[in-house]
Image 1 (cartoon, rainbow, N blue to C red):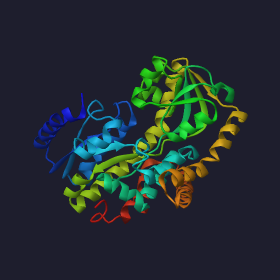
Image 2 (image 1 turned 120 degrees about the vertical axis):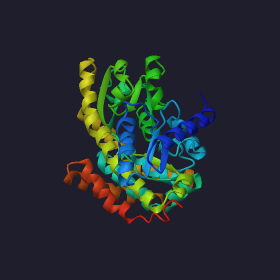
Image 3 (image 1 turned 90 degrees about the vertical axis):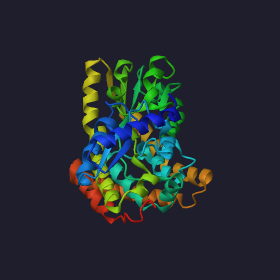
Image 4 (image 1 turned 180 degrees about the vertical axis):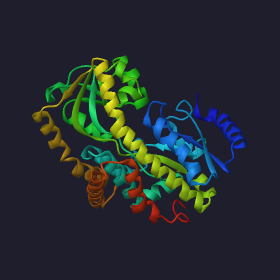
Length: 374
C-alpha cells in the first residue's frame, strides 16, 4: 500500500490509542524494522516503556509496523506526520544531509559499538550545520545507536582478497560500496529489508552486514558462509528522529522526557545489536551448518590498509561534492570524540545503563530544551 493511502488509517488508529490511554499525548512511532530486529524488539519497545516513566505518564506511544512505514519512506512519513517519531538513516539522503552524513562516511573506521553510538550522538548535537539541515527538513535529532562490526555474509566462500573479485554484495551505504569496488566486488544498493529476496533469487551473492541479520531478516536460510573482517559498523543512525511540528507542540518538560527516554533506549539497542544478538546469530549459523571463517592476517591487513585511507576520502568527498570546506576538521573532531568514548566504553565494560548515564551527563543534560530543535 502507498504511504499516502495509509495516512487516514494511521491517524484513526492513533485517535483510538489516545482515547484508550491515560496519557495526555500518544505519539505515532515507527521502527521501520520487523519485530525480530533490535530496532523494533528493543529500541522502540523499550522507548515505549521508558517514555511514560520519564514523562510521569504524560506521554505514550502507538507503534506503526514496517508494513506501514519502511526505511525508504521515513522522510516522507515524518514530514507528513504519518509518523511522529521514526528510525531514520542519514546515509539514505547524503545529498540532502551532507553534514550529518559525514560521520557516517567514517563507518569503516569504528570498532566499538557503544563508543560509536555515543560519539555520533555528541558529534551531531554539537554540529550546528547538522542541526540546521535537520531543521530545514522539519526534524529533531534524539541520538544514535550502532551495530556490531560488519562481516561478509555470502553464498560462496570468501577466504581471500581474490575471492572478492566479481562478488555481488548488498551494501548499506557508500563506505561499504567503496570497499567492495576497491577489492573488485560489485556493490548493490538494496534495502536491508529486501536482502533475503535478493540473495534467494541470486540477484546478489551476499551482504556486507551485521551477522545479526541472519536472524533479523532470516538470512540464516540462504547464507552459507560468514567471513569475519574489520568492516566497521553501522553508526549513521538517527534512532528517534522526531517531527519538528510534534516537537514544537510539546512542553519543555516533555521534550526533556523524550530525550531521556530515547537516550536510555539507544544504549539498550546498541547493546542488543552490537553485543548480545551477534552471539545468538553465531549460534544459529552453526546450527544451520553455515561456515564461520576468521579472515587470515594477510586478508585483514589488506582491509586495514584500505580503511586507513577512509578519513581522507570522506573529507575529499565532502569538500568536492558538497562544498564542506572544513570537512577535515569535522572528521578530526569525530575521531577525537570516538577515542574519548571508546575509553569510557572500556572503563564501564560497555554496560548499557552506565553508557546511557555517561551520554546523558555529557550531552543531553547540557541541552536547552526551550530552544533545541526550534
